[in-house]
Image (cartoon, rainbow, N blue to C red; front, side):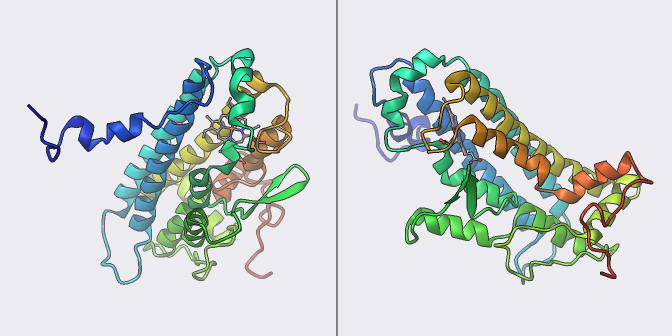
Length: 306
Ligand code: HEM
């Protein structure tokens, strides 16, 4: 009996025919499938993380004209928790890739990377960075500046422009804190232009300092702070694990995307320790262990008077 094509089955609902025919190897290597699957699964999980972040952003900073809601924080926790669980999964997936040895990769690397293909070109990874507030239009690739955009006009560029122009999760948190009944005095310094990289604010630092010094006063905000730290901490660990996985597979050779390879990846892994995504939350840690010695001006905050 012929199957009814309009019937919803496991495979039709999940479009498995399409999904499972998208792993096309370019060589005869038995190890190339792993390479494709690990990249494709990353892209699927990136897609989910972007969606979850969008939901959290909309809950914390609803678009103008939408009715106020009382469950914003609840939604933000749930969404951010999901994001960090996905991050943990991606971090542990490096273990699978680490089973790929240099001799195995060597067989197909030149073929798959012949036109400069590299994770460096992942659009969703850049969108994710933008949603997390890492608004780099250009990346310092060794001595060169490389744009994350193409030459304009493509669908990829439109997607990137929209993500760059949108609020990041941290912008949304600051908008939420700015409207909090306690009136922490936090302003939305972007004034509607979210394309620029966030610069840290004294009012935001003082707000988190209060929250962390007395967590019983605002336990839900304390939890929000820790959720954000979970996300940034996992993002750092993903980069560090990518670096160490790459080191064991290709050593210190150059990347197919044109970078110096390990040297470049060490730089990006370090970057978040130098300039964090959520800077005030890290400054609170600096402050907590050195209260008397913490100087707001030296920590890079302009004081209200100047
Ligand atoms: C054998 C496995 C891998 C090797 C040897 C490798 C190597 C590299 C290298 C050398 C770079 C620097 C840019 C370049 O010159 O190409 C890079 C960047 C990148 N790779 Fe991988 N990679 C591997 C697996 C993966 C996987 C599974 C993903 C998941 C999507 C990934 C995502 C990225 C991303 C997003 C960047 C850009 C990082 C940034 O600019 O901050 N890589 N990779």
